[in-house]
Length: 96
Image (cartoon, rainbow, N blue to C red):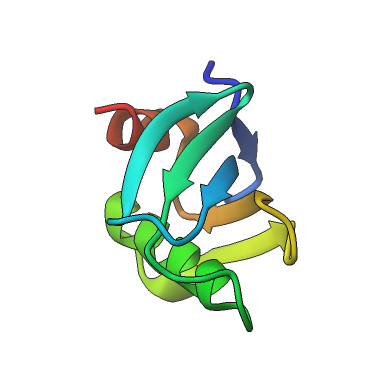
């Protein structure tokens, strides 16, 4: 099991480390026990949180409303819940 994925009822919780103000939106790889993501948006007024949810939803092939922020609203360390996704599906998409 990947350290950044945790199965939950109805979906999966993904632990991420976010680097804002990058040159492009991308999955970088692992940083400790978290999945490192880079985003172009600055960390102001929830812009990076919104982009993080939308980016993960697109990668996982689910609607934007199915990905929600569970913890880390004002931190680079975030936990997001993706409804309707299994840990196996998430691992396949995020590690390929």
